[in-house]
Amino acid sequence: MYEKNIGTKQKALRLNLDRRIYGSFAEIGAGQETAAVFFKAGGSSGTVAKTMSAYDMTFSDAIYGTEESGRYVVESRLMKMLNKEYSLLEKRLSEKRGADTTFFAFANTVVALNYQKTNEGHGWLGCRFQSEPLSPPNDVVIHVRLLDNENVLQQQTLGVIGVNLIYGCFYYAKSPETLVLSLMDDLSPERIQIDTLRCEGPAFEGVDNRLMSLYLVKNGFTDAALFGPDGRVLQPQEALYKKNIVVMRGRLRPVTNVQLDMIDNGLKQFREEPDVDPNRVLLLSELTLHNLKANEQGIDEKDFLDRVDILCGLGQTVMISNYHEYYRLVAYLSRLTRLKIGLIMGIPNLEYIFDEAHYHYLAGGILESFAALFSRKVKLFIYPTLRNGHIHTCDQLELPPTLEPLFQYLIRNDKLEDITDYNEQNLHISTDRVLEMIQAGEDGWESMVPAPVVKQIKDNCLFGYPCEIEYTPLSQQIKQAVAQGTMDDGGNVLNGLPIPASAQTAAPAQ
Image 1: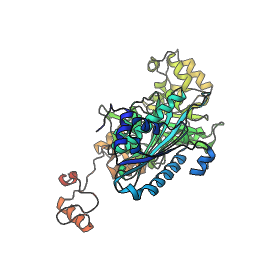
Image 2 (image 1 turned 90 degrees about the horizontal axis):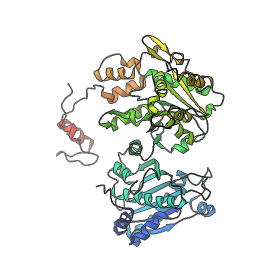
Image 3 (image 1 turned 180 degrees about the vertical axis):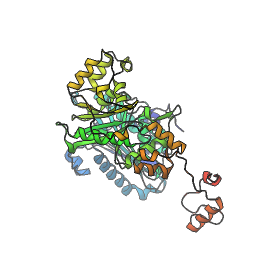
Image 4 (image 1 turned 90 degrees about the vertical axis):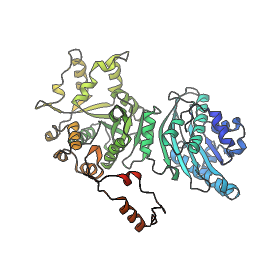
């Protein structure tokens, strides 16, 4: 059960008094703040086996080895720390108390705000822990951005989130979303952001780390999260550093031929820009929280994963963000790369950008938003739209007379460009209409969707596609399980998972 009002000191004290929990701390870069909380809470001898901090690079390399990149605040460094400290813990203590103790190793490698305040504080934190004595260990790893404007405040923040991480591993591992929520206890997104979270191990069997990323964005702990074509969570700063980034935003429910045409031809024109290195180009397919909300009930997690599976299956890197406005997206990406950024969009989105009503909350109105959106190294690539039988490009964009000079300024300064090499046969495709056809079981939608996507939709009954699921009577399921050696004749599970209740009561497909 999630205890929302429990404080940092109370968490540390509860861990200290739990004699089953015992481990070591290794902290580099901002003091030994997490271990200090346990010492100050009282009863720390029940929890702390060892605490250390190898600040000097020579000492650190001698203990954990060197990094190929030469950097110390990286995930690979954190994993070396966890590997070393946890293996020492087991080697030295497993025989003495392994049968009745759940061991853990907590580590962090951090760069906090320097004296001149010329850097950005950030770091990696991780906890390797056992959920039961003698069981294989599990990992929870996070990357944080430290936003306090004083070094001492950043140190305090690290101590709090370190305690939250260890506490969540031992008391909330069975409820992943609760674990995520608990990480920010006694903290706020104004002080710290968590932009990467990864859970691994037997305690998290069945947990999808992409959903964990969604929880981070949905709960406001970060504004964006990223994962690669293999579905693995990526740390945005490392993944996007020194990259020419191209973004295509949409509901992508499902991906259609027109969207692939937008991506292919928009990407082609972006690569041809004189200040773009084709070898450094990274395409992001962006899903905003707004586009993920299919109805008033909020975000359907299965629908989210279905869309991501399709995009990853097409070899794309996926971003989920809380940036409804394009200028906020560009401001975020510009913090991660100094190279040119491209946005691929259709005429309707361009019209949205030029609608002054969307910027009434900004003191500078549309000009303030455009100052961020059209920075020196940003360019929009506009895909045409079919309306009333006519193709609309930037030349046909209808704007109020007061905004027309602003539009011409952007055109003449190479901030906007039509996508010229497009497939006219795709312009009639409407994603909403394709979705209606899929859900109604109508023929013809298959020609509007890429073949691999069609197969995924039909094989997995995605987006409401009316599949006929083959029904197997419960008695037959038991016979099959007995033959496979997973059940005895009485229907008792021998190994593996029991037959789901839903399968036992399902009716035959009509």
